[in-house]
Image (cartoon, rainbow over the protein chains, first blue to last red):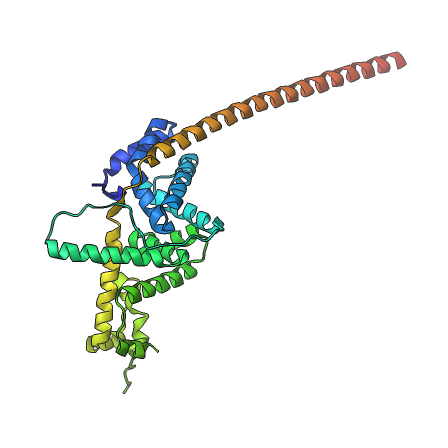
Length: 198
Length: 127
């Protein structure tokens, strides 16, 4: 079972960052070991493709390694990695010329870190999470990126706009559209309500 | 006496996600509408469930296919070696350019001394 970055011991990670900034390669390798699954998860959620996610992760760590001296430690290393990953994914998706058929196939293994609770409500919550994951997968990459970074990874609008190369206003508009599409997909409106929406 | 603004469900719909995530606020007219409208209450609940579920995805970490960590570390190793070679080469280039500059400066200084000596000799001969 894996835990996301922010739940791991921050002081240990801070020490590793300091050592890596001082030129300790082993310390950076250790940071990679501690964070790569989480970084991969974000890359996968942004690209919706396992191979693309691998490429994005590779590039993200190279950029992090080269830019480590610029990391000032005013945010967590994980947040910094999210921003780099978002930027890499955005660049990657913009460069990708060939269109890939995005199927709703999710053969990645999900590990849930929650403690055991009521099995019925757990199953229901898991079902909803699976449906949300599928719905995210079906969103256009530009909308998906914004809603994942804001609502899943809690990045501020400003950071999202910077890493995706769009204005803050555009990021907010995309978020609104993405949430609307997700809600409509997950909770289809009845005939009566659709008449109201027209 | 001021009449209170009456909102329709369509007016309220766009504001609901903002109310749920705390980025927006509900004024009196909006609150009154939602309190008395089962449709909008249901929509509010849906937004809440959606945002809660999205937030919960954060705790799920995908298991990457085996080999990814090895690939990342190997790439970093290669990048580190390339960087070391580059800095070595740029260091040598710097030393070469530095030597060239020093030699040029020394040559120029020597030339200036020779010219100054010649000029001094000419002045002495003339006097």
